[in-house]
Length: 370
Image 1 (cartoon, rainbow, N blue to C red):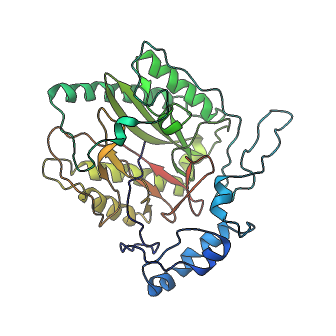
Image 2: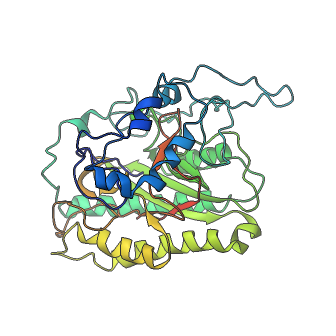
Image 3: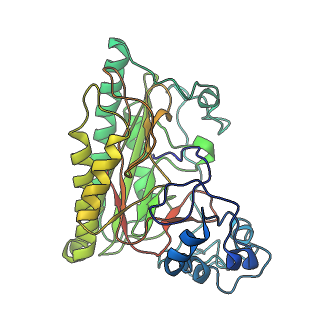
């Protein structure tokens, strides 16, 4: 499960590493889009053709604020009489063809006999809020062995869920499979109630970058889906994910194959650098170089992260080049590298559920993480 690092506001210009100035797009201000800041007038002009796509996303919305409207939609479509299913955010300006299919199933429970992380009941990961953000934990031999065990269990669960991916099944069914397999291994599924996430797995289909919420949508022949499995066992978390083809149509689509295989290759290339002394910021350089060679882009909003007794902790591991991540690899460090690769633009839009992150242009994206 990727994390969104706390950062200073950056210029919206493509590839621009400068901090944003007070200069904002006048059209965005007019229609109520917030935080549309650039570093300079020249940068704004250079990025105009790409930036104006955001205005298209906002078409038809009032000047009361497109983002406020997105976050607090007031219109809910009526349930289909035949199925009871509905789209909870019909007025939202979706960037691609995917739509949520509600209602969500009832929250799944974890037996009390299985140890729970601190957020299981409250949704608030208190232990993560009071850590030193400049300190990277180094595990002793006991901690390393505990991590190996939970990661092996995570791989088992991911493989079990992946075996059920096929046209005709719902992402909610995949969540059920994940939850059951986790419980059978005496593991708590880490996403469940983490910052109030409602499910035990993240299922991200097609244009969804990450954090897709399992619902009643049926997988179609030609879809691609990322399964993000995280487990808590023995006081430690595992976090891994892979993207899969749904049916033969997906395997026959050149663009789907390109983005999926590029994401896998980006992870593999980055993993070759894992050794004592490697600077954390170097992973992004090799990932973006390979992605660009395949005519793909790298999502910047979300990054890899430390993982151990905490689900998310230092270091942050950006996947794009010329990042300013701190730290270097040392024996005993445990962290994820999980590049999110897109066929189109790297910018993202979040659905009103406050979790589902999609590409701004609706083009497909894939991710692999270990």
